[in-house]
Amino acid sequence: MADKYPGPFCELHNITKSDLQQGHITKPAQPLLNGIVIEISHYLVTLGHNSNDLYNILVQLDPLLQSVSVKSLKVKVTRICEQKKKLSHKKKVIGVKNVSDLLNATFSPPTVKVVGEIQSLASVNDNSDLNLNKTIEKIEKISVSDKLSCKTVSTQTGASDNNNLSKATNLLQYENSKLQKQSISISKKIQEQKDQLNEIERRIGHFSVRNINKRDETQKKIFMHCVMHKD
Image (cartoon, rainbow, N blue to C red; front, side):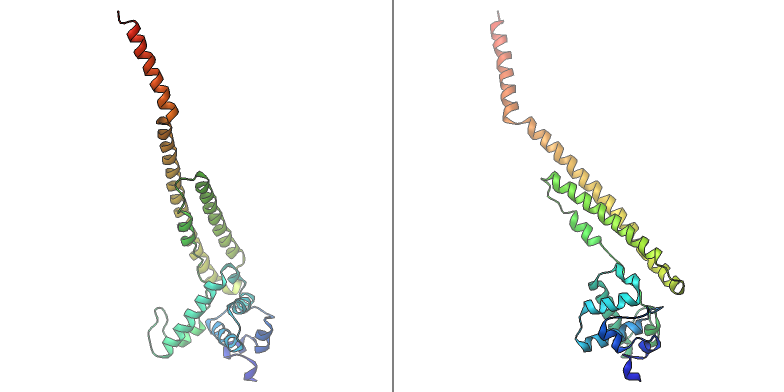
């Protein structure tokens, strides 16, 4: 009967090998424990499945994971597997006492970070007002998207996992607050660059050929006027 399940944690939540092979879970796991995630990950590897297959399974078990990317989720699962390996070899892992504590802990969604994306958007062409405006718009969209992500998490709270969801929500709100501050700072810097460009263009216009010729003609007229009325 044990061969029906990938491991003891999956057996407790009635997650069978057949379910994983078909890629369909009949009932979400509440809460989703690290032990379940590790057993599913190891079993999918034996089937030759990829990160997308793991993502699709875990999202069915915990809908909150829809807010993260396949890559970030895979990184989080890999980190937990590495922590289990260290603890199994009597090595220390910060915040975890032993393998049992790790496996029985609730699997928390990886924190969404878009700081790098915002910083990359701040690298604009100093000679283009159009690029500056597009960058500002992208920063605003990222900020709005982050707010919506937090709102989505808060509206999907489950009674049995309220404590862990609250922690995840607080983390997202903290990240959102930092990103908003950085967005404001970057927007100000971009506006300063824009003002500097306008000032440079104004100065260049002052020394344009047309304006110089105009001033020369004015000086000539003044000189001729002085010569004609010298006596």
